Image (cartoon, rainbow, N blue to C red):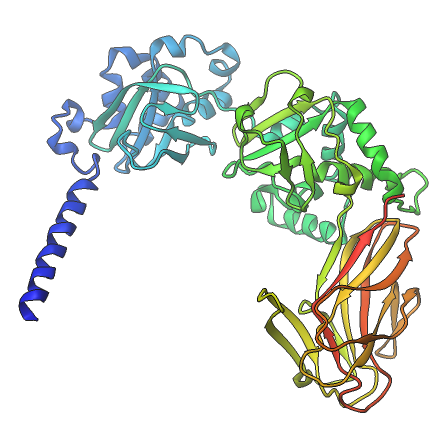
Amino acid sequence: MILLKYKYARLFASVLTLAIISCSNPWDDRENNGHVNLNFNLTQAITNKAETSEFARLLVETGYDTILAASKTYTVFVPTNAAIDQIGDEILGDPEALKEFVGNHIALTAYSSERNEEETQIKMFSTKYLTFKGSTQIDDATIVTANQYAKNGVFHIIDKALTPKLNIWQYIKSQEGTSATSDYLLSLKDFNIYKSDSIAKVLSEENGAGYLADSLTNSYLKNVYNLNNEKNSYTLFLMEDDGYNEEVDKMKPYLIKPSDDAEIDSTGIYSQYFTLRDMAFHGKYELDELPSTLVSRFGVEVPIDKTQIVGEPIHLSNGIVYIMKRVDVPLAKRLLTTKIEGENNGQYFNFIRSRMFYRDRTDLSGLFFQDIYVQNPGSPQPWITYSAKDFYSTTYKVYWRAINDIQTNVFQQRLMIYGKSEIINDATFFSETIVLFPYMNVELDNYDEVFIGEFTLNEARDIDFISLVGANTSTNGNNSLTLDYLKFIPVLK
């Protein structure tokens, strides 16, 4: 047994040695690579190359020569003189733009072209992220001479300058006044889709520009995706005005919103938001990668018809934008079912917390689910409350799945939906009743959805008080509550 352990130890040591050798870093081995620049810092090494003298001059002009003479480790992607000759005066003649331009070629830490990763996102001094693809491509430039080591880093000579691109949000800003979609998205800096947006914007102002990468300054950036974020990649579809307006008009009957200000078209504002929130997607989808359907972060299935794309895709620093004649999303896909899980409850009344159980269960097919069960509450009409956002102005069909599997008797419960409430003398009173469904039996071991009834909302809104209420009896066993989930299915008009 001792001999066996010894053999395994030798085998492990051999494998470990092999792994260390195979994973060695070219940067760590640079002293053994015979590079003539190892006695020079990066500024000096780049200056010594005749084919990169123009970029070396720009390093001095912008002050980056001093940075690249420091003791930290850097990577520089150095354009050839021919590549620099292609850069116009709008950059070369603008000190601020020039500094950003040069910084877009410099990164902290050494990145060799000999890497295990197929793609690496690199943060440049410009704050943009560039993709190092394979061993020869940085963004849309090709490396012509790789792995030129200096004593404080490495530089690669590239055939094309890495001019900083706008990000998606900056591109939207650049389209102000020429695109209805861009104008609307920018307007959400001042208009709050949700109450929480106004709080977030105040917080952003108090903490200064750039707080949380501007994600709180605009209702779209906050609630959909922060398209100003350079670190992540996104795909955005922007429609031409006619197609966009047609999609918005489809939503208006379902997003009726009264306004106290006659000059504010709340229905139009919310219809635009619920149209455009499904036009942004996480990740960059190149044209040949676009699937026939994309699912938005809100669960809407969006058909992608490539024949509707206008012009070439717009490649930006944090993703890609497609201009579309129209993105036609069927209302059956756009109007989402609201599903509330039983275990995600809010307040509870008329019983103590120890009578409420969150359960992990399996159904008759062996599928796992979670639910809530109130057993032996000891008082009549125990309540559990729920809330949900973004109900449409339409009729809803309501279902529940409620599992009565630990009692031997059938009990009853009901659903009561209230709108507004007010607190008087520390007691909550409901001043708006939406619908009070009758008591219904919760049958033994029924795992099917049960239709509860339907109700109609005349305006789109949030609902804060969706209440599951037990029987009006103090007899335990007859006043239980149980809920796997509620479903509210919108009806097309």
